[in-house]
Image (cartoon, rainbow, N blue to C red):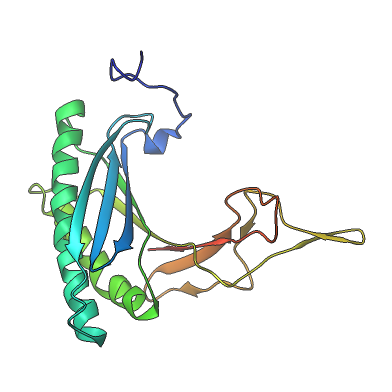
Length: 207
Protein backbone atom coordinates (compact mmCIF):
# COMPACT_ATOMS: atom_id res chain seq x y z
CA UNK A 1 0.00 0.00 0.00
CA UNK A 2 2.84 2.38 0.84
CA UNK A 3 4.32 1.98 -2.64
CA UNK A 4 0.97 2.77 -4.29
CA UNK A 5 0.74 5.92 -2.19
CA UNK A 6 4.32 6.86 -3.16
CA UNK A 7 5.48 6.50 0.42
CA UNK A 8 8.65 4.83 1.71
CA UNK A 9 8.75 1.08 2.24
CA UNK A 10 11.73 1.64 4.52
CA UNK A 11 13.94 4.52 5.63
CA UNK A 12 17.68 4.95 6.17
CA UNK A 13 19.34 6.73 9.07
CA UNK A 14 21.17 9.24 6.90
CA UNK A 15 23.99 11.36 8.32
CA UNK A 16 22.89 15.00 8.58
CA UNK A 17 25.52 16.04 6.00
CA UNK A 18 23.67 13.93 3.42
CA UNK A 19 20.06 14.88 4.18
CA UNK A 20 20.16 17.29 1.22
CA UNK A 21 22.14 14.92 -1.01
CA UNK A 22 21.15 13.35 -4.31
CA UNK A 23 22.69 9.92 -4.91
CA UNK A 24 22.96 8.90 -8.56
CA UNK A 25 23.63 5.38 -9.83
CA UNK A 26 24.79 4.66 -13.39
CA UNK A 27 25.28 1.23 -14.95
CA UNK A 28 25.73 -0.06 -18.47
CA UNK A 29 24.99 -3.49 -19.91
CA UNK A 30 25.48 -4.72 -23.47
CA UNK A 31 23.20 -6.57 -25.87
CA UNK A 32 24.52 -7.23 -29.39
CA UNK A 33 25.29 -3.94 -31.14
CA UNK A 34 23.69 -1.87 -28.41
CA UNK A 35 24.29 -0.81 -24.85
CA UNK A 36 21.60 -0.12 -22.31
CA UNK A 37 22.42 2.79 -20.01
CA UNK A 38 20.38 2.70 -16.80
CA UNK A 39 20.35 5.56 -14.30
CA UNK A 40 18.58 6.37 -11.05
CA UNK A 41 18.71 9.40 -8.74
CA UNK A 42 17.29 9.81 -5.25
CA UNK A 43 15.06 12.76 -4.40
CA UNK A 44 14.03 12.27 -0.76
CA UNK A 45 16.00 12.94 2.45
CA UNK A 46 15.93 9.21 3.28
CA UNK A 47 17.43 8.23 -0.13
CA UNK A 48 14.65 5.68 -0.64
CA UNK A 49 12.74 7.03 -3.65
CA UNK A 50 14.27 7.33 -7.10
CA UNK A 51 13.84 9.06 -10.42
CA UNK A 52 15.03 6.61 -13.09
CA UNK A 53 15.50 6.34 -16.85
CA UNK A 54 16.83 3.75 -19.31
CA UNK A 55 18.49 4.73 -22.59
CA UNK A 56 19.61 2.49 -25.52
CA UNK A 57 22.93 3.36 -27.16
CA UNK A 58 24.62 2.15 -30.35
CA UNK A 59 28.06 0.62 -29.66
CA UNK A 60 29.37 1.62 -33.11
CA UNK A 61 31.01 -1.73 -33.79
CA UNK A 62 31.82 -0.55 -37.29
CA UNK A 63 34.59 1.50 -35.66
CA UNK A 64 37.63 0.11 -33.86
CA UNK A 65 40.06 1.13 -31.14
CA UNK A 66 40.30 4.57 -29.60
CA UNK A 67 38.04 6.19 -32.20
CA UNK A 68 35.18 3.89 -31.22
CA UNK A 69 35.79 4.34 -27.48
CA UNK A 70 35.80 8.13 -27.83
CA UNK A 71 32.57 8.21 -29.86
CA UNK A 72 30.76 5.86 -27.46
CA UNK A 73 31.95 7.83 -24.43
CA UNK A 74 30.94 11.22 -25.86
CA UNK A 75 27.46 9.92 -26.69
CA UNK A 76 27.20 8.38 -23.21
CA UNK A 77 28.19 11.69 -21.59
CA UNK A 78 25.39 13.40 -23.55
CA UNK A 79 22.93 10.76 -22.30
CA UNK A 80 24.10 11.14 -18.71
CA UNK A 81 24.07 14.95 -18.87
CA UNK A 82 20.49 14.84 -20.14
CA UNK A 83 19.53 12.53 -17.29
CA UNK A 84 21.25 14.67 -14.64
CA UNK A 85 19.32 17.72 -15.85
CA UNK A 86 16.01 15.86 -15.56
CA UNK A 87 16.98 14.41 -12.17
CA UNK A 88 17.80 17.89 -10.81
CA UNK A 89 14.48 19.20 -12.13
CA UNK A 90 12.70 16.34 -10.39
CA UNK A 91 14.59 16.94 -7.12
CA UNK A 92 13.74 20.64 -7.20
CA UNK A 93 10.08 19.87 -7.94
CA UNK A 94 9.76 17.63 -4.87
CA UNK A 95 11.95 19.60 -2.45
CA UNK A 96 11.60 23.21 -3.63
CA UNK A 97 15.40 23.42 -3.60
CA UNK A 98 18.41 21.79 -5.29
CA UNK A 99 20.67 19.21 -3.62
CA UNK A 100 23.68 20.53 -1.75
CA UNK A 101 25.66 17.36 -2.46
CA UNK A 102 25.63 14.98 -5.40
CA UNK A 103 27.18 11.52 -5.17
CA UNK A 104 27.54 9.60 -8.44
CA UNK A 105 28.24 5.85 -8.43
CA UNK A 106 29.48 5.00 -11.93
CA UNK A 107 29.50 1.31 -12.85
CA UNK A 108 29.83 -0.32 -16.27
CA UNK A 109 32.97 1.60 -17.23
CA UNK A 110 34.58 -1.22 -19.25
CA UNK A 111 38.22 -2.09 -19.98
CA UNK A 112 41.40 -0.13 -19.12
CA UNK A 113 41.27 2.09 -22.23
CA UNK A 114 37.68 3.16 -21.54
CA UNK A 115 38.46 3.60 -17.83
CA UNK A 116 41.24 6.04 -18.70
CA UNK A 117 38.93 8.02 -21.00
CA UNK A 118 36.18 8.11 -18.39
CA UNK A 119 38.54 9.44 -15.72
CA UNK A 120 40.04 12.04 -18.05
CA UNK A 121 36.88 13.21 -19.86
CA UNK A 122 33.63 12.11 -18.26
CA UNK A 123 34.36 13.36 -14.75
CA UNK A 124 34.95 16.94 -15.90
CA UNK A 125 32.04 16.98 -18.36
CA UNK A 126 29.56 15.66 -15.81
CA UNK A 127 30.70 18.14 -13.15
CA UNK A 128 30.28 20.91 -15.72
CA UNK A 129 26.77 19.69 -16.61
CA UNK A 130 25.73 19.70 -12.94
CA UNK A 131 27.09 23.17 -12.19
CA UNK A 132 25.60 24.67 -15.36
CA UNK A 133 22.07 23.62 -14.38
CA UNK A 134 21.43 27.01 -12.80
CA UNK A 135 23.51 30.17 -12.49
CA UNK A 136 25.49 30.17 -9.24
CA UNK A 137 24.70 26.53 -8.46
CA UNK A 138 27.82 24.87 -6.96
CA UNK A 139 27.03 21.64 -5.09
CA UNK A 140 29.70 19.39 -3.64
CA UNK A 141 30.24 16.53 -6.11
CA UNK A 142 31.63 13.11 -5.27
CA UNK A 143 32.26 10.79 -8.23
CA UNK A 144 32.80 7.11 -7.43
CA UNK A 145 33.88 4.63 -10.12
CA UNK A 146 32.85 1.07 -9.32
CA UNK A 147 34.66 -1.95 -10.79
CA UNK A 148 33.26 -5.38 -9.95
CA UNK A 149 35.53 -7.25 -12.39
CA UNK A 150 38.66 -7.37 -10.22
CA UNK A 151 41.41 -9.98 -9.99
CA UNK A 152 42.29 -9.20 -6.36
CA UNK A 153 41.29 -11.73 -3.70
CA UNK A 154 41.53 -11.31 0.06
CA UNK A 155 41.60 -13.92 2.81
CA UNK A 156 41.37 -13.90 6.58
CA UNK A 157 43.52 -16.29 8.61
CA UNK A 158 41.88 -17.53 11.81
CA UNK A 159 44.03 -20.09 13.57
CA UNK A 160 44.83 -22.75 10.97
CA UNK A 161 41.86 -21.79 8.79
CA UNK A 162 42.00 -19.47 5.79
CA UNK A 163 38.57 -17.95 5.20
CA UNK A 164 36.82 -15.30 3.17
CA UNK A 165 36.76 -11.94 4.97
CA UNK A 166 33.33 -10.97 6.30
CA UNK A 167 31.08 -8.74 4.23
CA UNK A 168 31.83 -5.06 4.74
CA UNK A 169 35.61 -5.62 4.95
CA UNK A 170 37.45 -2.57 3.56
CA UNK A 171 41.06 -2.63 2.29
CA UNK A 172 42.44 0.90 2.10
CA UNK A 173 46.19 0.38 2.56
CA UNK A 174 49.11 -1.37 0.77
CA UNK A 175 47.25 -2.37 -2.43
CA UNK A 176 45.68 1.01 -3.07
CA UNK A 177 46.96 4.34 -4.34
CA UNK A 178 46.46 8.03 -3.63
CA UNK A 179 46.97 10.44 -6.52
CA UNK A 180 47.35 13.84 -4.86
CA UNK A 181 47.67 15.66 -8.18
CA UNK A 182 44.48 14.17 -9.62
CA UNK A 183 42.78 14.13 -6.18
CA UNK A 184 41.91 10.46 -6.51
CA UNK A 185 41.98 7.66 -3.97
CA UNK A 186 40.75 4.09 -4.10
CA UNK A 187 39.81 1.17 -1.87
CA UNK A 188 38.44 -2.38 -2.03
CA UNK A 189 35.37 -3.64 -0.23
CA UNK A 190 33.83 -7.10 0.20
CA UNK A 191 30.19 -6.25 -0.60
CA UNK A 192 28.44 -9.45 0.43
CA UNK A 193 28.79 -12.80 2.15
CA UNK A 194 30.36 -15.47 -0.09
CA UNK A 195 29.10 -18.91 0.94
CA UNK A 196 30.73 -20.64 -2.05
CA UNK A 197 34.28 -20.19 -3.45
CA UNK A 198 36.23 -16.97 -2.81
CA UNK A 199 34.72 -13.56 -2.22
CA UNK A 200 35.24 -11.08 -5.06
CA UNK A 201 36.00 -7.58 -3.79
CA UNK A 202 34.69 -4.47 -5.52
CA UNK A 203 37.21 -1.77 -6.39
CA UNK A 204 36.12 1.84 -5.81
CA UNK A 205 37.95 4.88 -7.20
CA UNK A 206 36.81 8.12 -5.58
CA UNK A 207 37.28 11.48 -7.32
